[in-house]
Length: 178
Image 1 (tube, one colour):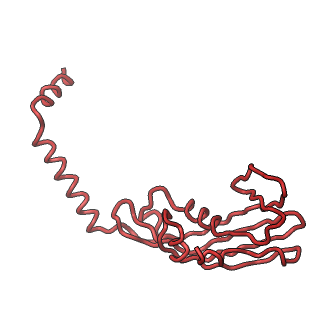
Image 2: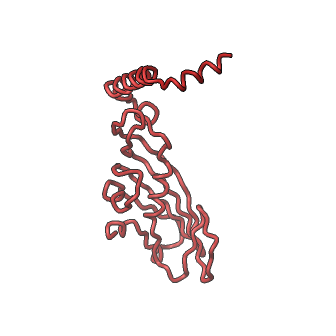
């Protein structure tokens, strides 16, 4: 977790106004999260932090590629990613239990903003539910050899199921035809 310390922005010494920070995100970042959907990637995050008197506005622009596994042919491929997100950071001494996806509450004694969980969440939410080479890759298609194997397996399983029909089920099929 020491690696994630570089994803903290010390805002206490910053003047009021807009500040920009660059962060590189790679496999070391994703290795810090045990259950990450992504194991490898090469991303760059530009975080624009607008400091105001009683709040911060963080705008995230994340670009690069992440490595995904195709749900059809099981090959790994690089999928391009481009996200833009925003988070509001409010300062309060009261216990604020109403944190939302966009509003984060910090104590007035805090001096830095940890953006690693935000980056992790934004990138993992961008992963498609069913990654496919042809849809999410950049000009690539599924492995034709693997597709042939899948198709041949489906045909042979259909033939096996037709040959090994239990006679009791065969009698029930005739009921449907009456």
